[in-house]
Amino acid sequence: MIKRIFSSAMLAIMLISGIVYGVKLYKHKYGEVDRNMIAKHLTSVMYNNGEYAIIDFMGNVVGDRFDMILGFDSGYDCLSFVICKGNKRGFLSTESGKQIFAPQFDRAWIDNPKLGLAAVVIGNKLGFVNVKTGKMAIEPQFDFENQHLYYNYIFRDNGYCIVPGKDSKFGVIDTTGKLLLPCQYDDVTFDDFGFVELQFSGKLGLCDSLLHIVLPPVYDRLEVFDLGIMVGELDYANGHKQYLLAYDGKEVISKLWLDEMDYEEIATPLYEPVAEGNKYDNDGYQKQGKKSAYTKFYLYDRYGVFDEKFNVIIPAKYDDIDYIGNGYFSCELGSLGAILNSKGQFVHGK
Image (cartoon, rainbow, N blue to C red; front, side):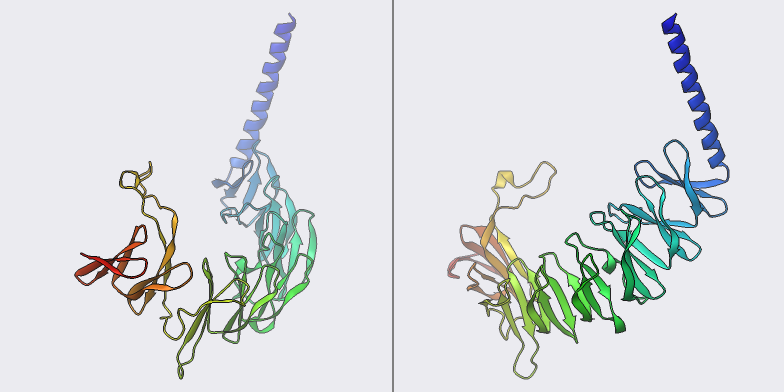
């Protein structure tokens, strides 16, 4: 008897829950023209009047309707989405779907999920809100212009963010809004090696990860890559100059490119060959061997090779060069070819 009563009660609960859920779905499906899953538990619904709403997995509408939702397809693991109502923007939680900030900002962008900071514009001033606390974190104070790119104003995990200044200049702030680099640069770029590249009056410079100046902005060309820092100076009267510097910006590793390197130069590390029977992985892609001590460089439409100490062992006079292992290189020039060793000496013709 007890089992029968318990089973009946459970069946009744399930039936009532199903009816409630069905009614909610029917209620909010009326006038619906589109829906899109935007988060793990949330779905956006578009109605025939152009408005949007957020519904949870139970079919409940969460919060008010709005005109647009932004940021769910940004590729960032954000804590909030940007919602629009008229000409104003606000934020709603990606977890609950509830509003964190009602639409009140002239512009707004996605947040940094680690810090919870998101850029907003009020009038022509840019500031930052904290979507974790629902409070203004940095009061709007930075001069915003419509042509500025939004992705500049997403905080990096290290707590730095690019901000605009007057006359389309840029600087860098921390999470308190303190200016770490003044808004005086034409461009500021974070690179993949942890450096910050600066442009000032057409010249290029470099800061380290702590925003200490490594190289003042006096160079015409600057590139950070896995061999060091390449800097170049244009001098049409006496010849262009290029240097390869250590990451501290002080030690000159090589003047290999001094007065002669084409500004379209390419330096490509060479890798040890893979055994013939083991060249491809299970997906059919060619395997790459261990990085060798040699690098192929490009100069005036020809290729050469330098070693790990940046000594040129094969001058740039070949159409192509392949590394065949054990310090030997296959060099091609027109229809001719040769095998050279690591001292650049001829070994065999092809």
